[in-house]
Image (cartoon, rainbow, N blue to C red; front, side, top):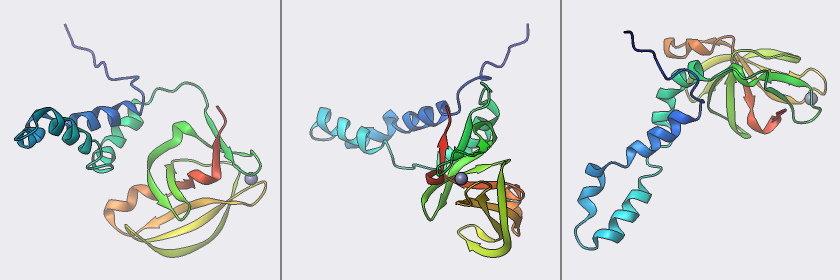
Length: 171
Ligand SMILES: [Zn+2]
């Protein structure tokens, strides 16, 4: 009797919630129980909700992307003109940031135009990037990683950053 893997089909968001809850363990809050057991326990458990907002999530992202069930084409469009520009299933990571705030890394893009290549110093080192524009209205949507110079960043090459503020869900 082989045991089947039951994790297939878990939504991408699930591992994040699970890891956050896992942070509040008995051993970690036990030290705060000295004077007012009930109250202190409650407070410390609450305080531990967001101690490491991103580190655990980053580790889980690879798995989450693989586990995300495909449920038809969920399309993101340009926030300015509704031109479809990328697919939810192509999201590699949601842990990126742009000047406008949070940004997502996608494996593919469509209906976009590329600006000139240029080297930029980003938080994770120097990269050759090209801005990406909406193919319809020319709004800047993010950038493409043309080349990464550090081995740990090579996975970004050929991938696209879309700024969350510049795209809208079509589902
Ligand atoms: Zn547009």
